[in-house]
Length: 72
Image (tube, rainbow, N blue to C red):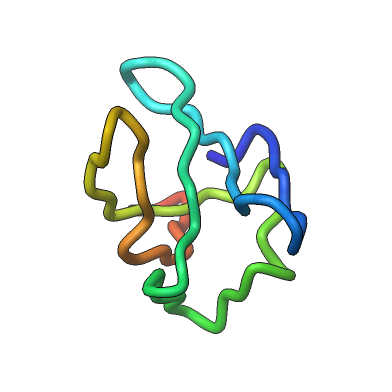
């Protein structure tokens, strides 16, 4: 679940998700793929998402973001 967002064109776009290991900041890159008609503009706090990431210098970079339903 997204717990906060920080989308600013002049800065690094990121959002915070709640995980079993605690809150994690996820950074969006030019290579991030959005599925399920998602865009940077329609992500919102409280949205359930599945995020595939890789770790670079201790930061989580989003590879793919897709919407998660309550049933998944």
